[in-house]
Length: 358
Image 1 (tube, one colour):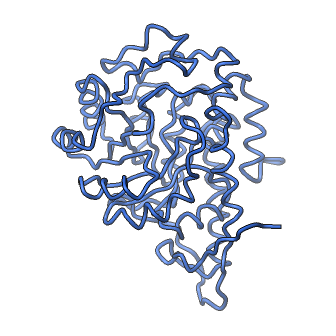
Image 2 (cartoon, rainbow, N blue to C red):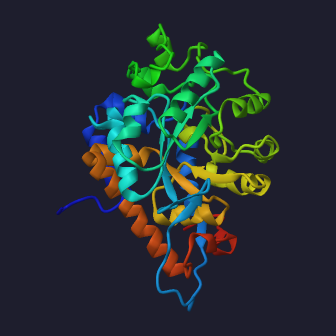
Image 3 (cartoon, rainbow, N blue to C red):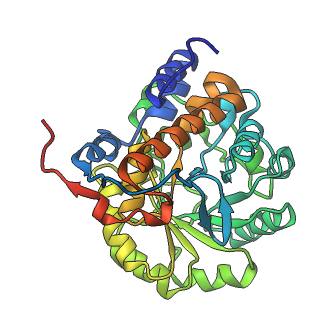
């Protein structure tokens, strides 16, 4: 269509104009001073590409193997709560878009539609995200629900063990609405005011969870286990030691704890310590060059959170497909210009760190 967005920043601007202020601030905002939120994006600008010439490649193959499954793109859709805040079709639209583009949708525990309904919306691969709940039976119920509905992996978010302080939400008196994801034996909190302000100590997630719980989780599912929220070499090594299948280098989009390390800066040490554990990067991806830089630093693929909401706000499933197509074209251009025929050919020799770009 004429005048359609040509990059993710234009999609972001449309989303800001489309959503009510409180919903926009929920999607766009971060914890306290939003330093991590800003740095997670800006640090990409200090990583430069080192393209090679006369590489003799006629085209680029963007497909990648994720947990033994070949997908068409080196980027997936992150588990994010309540897609319906951006479009009426919510996760149903996101599932259709991911399937159409040939990638994976990770469905949040706080989804707008029932997980079984999302599973039926499209045939593409899907992961289900959950937590170590204080009541472990709630975790078991969700895991078994995912298995019964054909989800391909269990993604456990680790960096949400305590309610964060999100000041935009506090100023807006933001109210989290109960979602379909609350249905499998998990009631919404009784005191929504305290829960939504982000300053209550009450939490359904168990802050007492430990690495011993990995063996317990393995005992209740045969699905691959993905841990989200790893940003240190120590925790990456523990993922390998305890048999986690994959990890996501993530700081929760800067939404939970401020002044943490940007994910692209954490990525090299995590990848070096992860052993056979597959590593994906979450956070700050806005350009195809960002995707290639992350792969060069050790990620098998990257994950997209906020850009998914931008696409939904623009045009539902077609808007998300458009967002993914923009990135697909930019990654292909970057690979061809850098002389890389396959994702697997991208290594650290392709990038260099600049102290400052002028």
